[in-house]
Length: 177
Ligand code: FEO
Image (cartoon, rainbow, N blue to C red; front, side, top):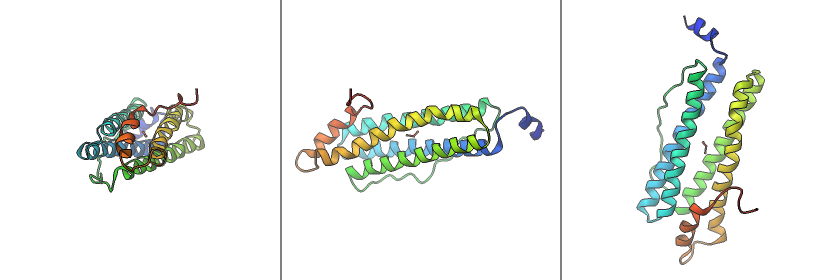
C-alpha cells in the first residue's frame, strides 16, 4: 500500500525528508523569535518585542507553506516537535546577533534543499523553493541591518532606547530608492 501511494506522488522520499527537516527548522525559528519577543518585553524593549512577535508569525507561515506543499503532493507532512528553545539571552545585542545567525542558517538550509532538488530532477520543489530563496534575501537583510544599528547608533546613554525605536522601521528595498 505504501508503495502504491508513493507511486502516486512525484515527491521523492529524500525530498520529503529534507522538507520535513525544514518544516521543523521554521517551527524552531518561530519558537525562538517568540522567546526573543518575551525577553524584549521583559526588558523594556517594546518595539523590538513587536518586531519579534511579527517574525514569529512569519516563520510559522513559512512552516505552513512547506507543510502544505508536502501534504498537497501526497507526502507525509510531520507536525514538528519543537525543543531546545532558549528563554534567556545575554543582552539586547546578543538577541539580534542570534537572530541573524538563525537566518543565515536557514538560508544555508534552503540552498541545500534547492541543490538536492536539482540533483533529483525535482523541478517542482526547485521552483517551489525559489520563493524561500527570495524571502531569505529580505530576512537576512533586515536581521543584518538590525545588528548594524548597534554600531551605527551605539548603546551608550539613550542608545538602546533609540535602537529599539529604530528596529521596526527597517525595511528591505526602500533605503536605496
Ligand atoms: Fe523562515 Fe526567516 O526563515
